[in-house]
Amino acid sequence: MIRQAARDFAQRELIQDVIERDYKGIYPAKHIETMRQLGFFGMMVSPEYGGGGMDAISYVMALEEISKIDSSVAVIMSVHNSLVCLGIEKYGSKLQKDKYLHDLTSGKKIGVFLLSEPEAGSDATRQKTLAEDKGDHYLINGTKNWITSANSGSVYMLFAQTYPEKRHKGINALIVDKDSPGISLGPKEDKMGLRSSDTHSVMFTDVKVPKENRIGEDGFGFKLAMALLESGRIGIAAQATGLAAGAYERSLQYAKERKAFGTEIINHQAIAFKLAEMAVKIENARNLVHKAAWLKDQGKDYLLAGSMAKLYAADMAMEVTTDAVQIHGGYGYVREYHVERLMREAKVTQIYEGTSEIQKIVISRALSKGL
Ligand code: CAA
Image (cartoon, rainbow, N blue to C red; front, side):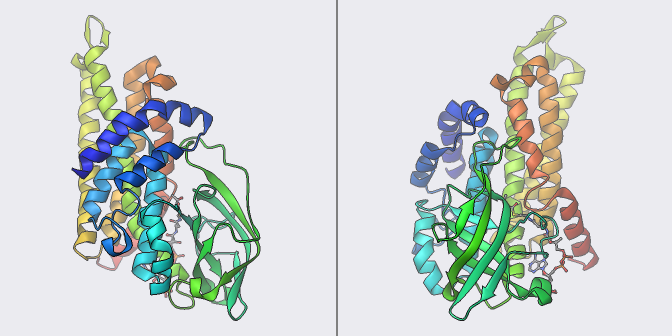
């Protein structure tokens, strides 16, 4: 039922203006409203806080269906659910849960995850943004980069350094209201893909954040970021699987209709074999995503499975969407047929929430530990 609801929403509603929104970089405000009504903003949060109380398998199915059509919407949903909602529900204080979760699960407010900096992307321990301890509050100064939903979202989960000499052990995670005095945004990034989601740099100048907004113990921030990215990576893997599946479904349909050399092109082995390979790769990625989600649902360790799913699905999505453009020929190179957009969308899944290279670090370290 959840998969069907997400599929209906994507195939009936998102599809209508996805090309225009991508071209003009328009935020999907009216679709966010529908998603609120469908309950897509607190899917895995407990009903106690207005969430859907669903499992991770249901969540990745919904994300896959939405990503078949529109990854801009999928990334807003993924950062909100996998990172911010999970972070506050699992690690936040009672006060923080009561104050923030209802607005997040209802979708009234969108969650934002602020980890990356101009000089701290893959090397996330090198946070330069400062959160100076001023007794009853922290004073924040610094800049965050590539922040999804920075303008449209309003519940910021900020990572900043309190004790630089302690390196990653000095980082804290704070919940910050976007409207706090001293926060300003850079211009909307003019991205290659996911152009309908809003990505900005965010500047903090003497921003006061009450101490009660710190998540977990003093210095817990980096561990929190890593723990949340474990979960986030399953979502991004589902997104990559979805957009590849979207490109594949379009290619299959096109190959059955388009004729060349006197027959539908699916009858040419060059095309048929490409489609066969695409289908196998997508199925492999989906299985990895579902395995990671299942392990999460069982309360088992999913670090290795999540990173494997992210690495495989992202690289696979780049290959499959490139093949989809090739199958479409000249039509694949123009907007109307969607596959060029899906190819542009695929690229970022190899970059954000840990590049493919970072996934190999995580995987190889986990393997050497015998996980
Ligand atoms: N859970 C809990 N703790 C963890 C952890 C995990 N999964 N992984 C690491 N840690 C802990 C380690 O135990 C260690 O703690 P101790 O020193 O107390 O033992 C500490 O974190 C540091 O770990 P490492 O020594 O492994 O640190 P490292 O610098 O060698 O490597 C890294 C860490 C894996 C490379 C990490 O920096 C990383 O994941 N980088 C990528 C960052 C990233 O994914 N950014 C995405 C931005 S968010 C985004 O993209 C959202 C969006 O908009 C879509």
